[in-house]
Image (cartoon, protein in one colour):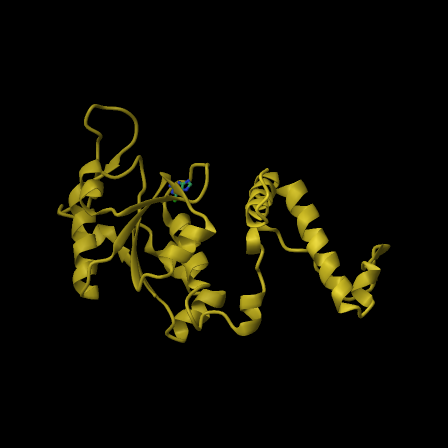
Amino acid sequence: MNYYVLTLFPEMIQQAAGASILGRAAKNGFITVEAVNIRDFSANKHMRVDDYPYGGGAGMVMEAEPVYRAVRAVEEKAGRTMRVVYLTPQGRVLNQTMVEEFAREEALVLLCGHYEGIDERVLEEVVTDYVSIGDYVLTGGELGAMVMIDAISRFVPGVLSNEESSQFESLQDNLLEYPHYTRPEIWHDRQVPPVLLSGDHKKIEEWRHQKSLERTKSRRPDLFRRSYRVSCIWHGDER
Ligand code: 6GU
């Protein structure tokens, strides 16, 4: 997977994408993350990329032309057209289904806005997808772009080891994962649940499934109701 991140703060992306599992994935050639500075495409001798909003009001607006040039330059370099994702609180809220769908692409352009936003006209012309990472407001799209890169890359073959792929399965079947324990057996007067020491693999599996259900019901009642409905439909039961 090749990611092209259009941003006014390329260091934010380079820093975050260079570490840990993503850094290893890039080093091993499974992903590339190119941070493209929109300022390099300024149409202005002072390298300015923002201006006052027509109609007045607070804040500045990113100009259309530098964003347009940056997108076209990246498409030229990649030798193909790509989906262009604009990271914005006004987008569709990202979920695991959307992540898996984006992971089927070979390359993605992730466009990060700042200030009050980007001139609407270039968005109309180049953006194919509007994505938010949740119902809160960030200072810019960079963290959203990193969230997408991280979540999507987990589905790129080679990025995770076998062990890593079976880990972090917190949303499998819309259920949260069961709790985990390691040594020591007693810590701060707290015992490891005895069933985990029993060696009875069938009982352990049942216990873990039960914990998954309880945890989902108490922490994510929204997910629990959804998976309950899915399981009723699956069992052909009219609730
Ligand atoms: Cl992707 N960008 C910004 N600026 N704010 C957000 C967001 C993205 N998702 C939630 N809030």
